[in-house]
Image (cartoon, rainbow, N blue to C red; front, side, top):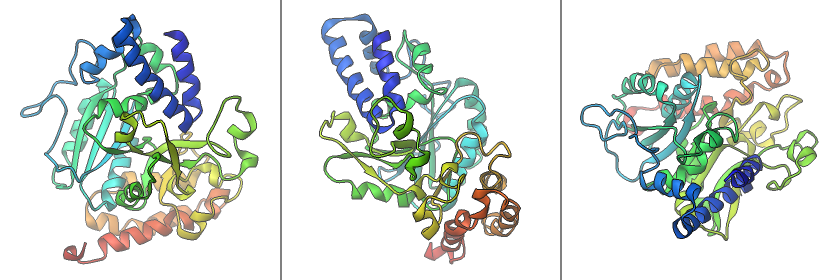
Length: 363
């Protein structure tokens, strides 16, 4: 089992290739466990048979009228499905991410939130206050791993990040899924990245952005001793998945690579702008990795996060978002990212105009 975990740990570091490898290895281990009766694999089989909830416990204490997972409403299958994993002090980031998704999205959105048990009550308190949103639905799940090896799984990567490996196995009823990290901000409708699923060819099972646009500052191509995808690797902080193909062990597989504006990070501007698509069309999805929403290293990213965190879901609050935000961004021009602040609000301005400056019946 330890040998298997080391292999999966290496794969996690490899980005997309690692995800495919680990998932296929997990599927193989399930088959071997069922046939050979070896204890670690049998524990995984038991965990999956229990619906991915963990041995000896359900998915939380459900409230009145709820069946283990916390659903506000029942939604038809045309929902967009969004997944996030929240551990530690990630509640506020996650709520802000969800708010940004809801502000602009058009189709119903179902959020699948995997969180540590101590965060569940806080999530319910915050998200149940959005029950007036008819297009929003959520399910809350515990962080669970195969019994007997949970501690080892949690140590593989940053806290609870390996939970994403099990999403195709836990969310068996979900055909396609957009996984995002907690430090994501949507600056245009989720519908738009969701529509990229239609562009997948017959072998593509997932879509991600490159880890770097500029090889001279890339990590994988300069330092990695393991395989990685493409020229500079890929970043899994925004990952669009066809999970039906994944569950079928779709071994003739490939990746749909979308442009950097769908996963715009400090690396795209910290040494000067290197995301051409964002320069032309603006940032579509902002990714504040490395904690930049909470320190002073990248004040432009922090200004964007604070503006959306403090914005309510009321139309007037959203319409009045831009002017004070631009004033804050103008204070960041002493940094490389701040010098290009207009690309941060270019798409945001368009999204607000399209969604909130048109009559309700035309939305």
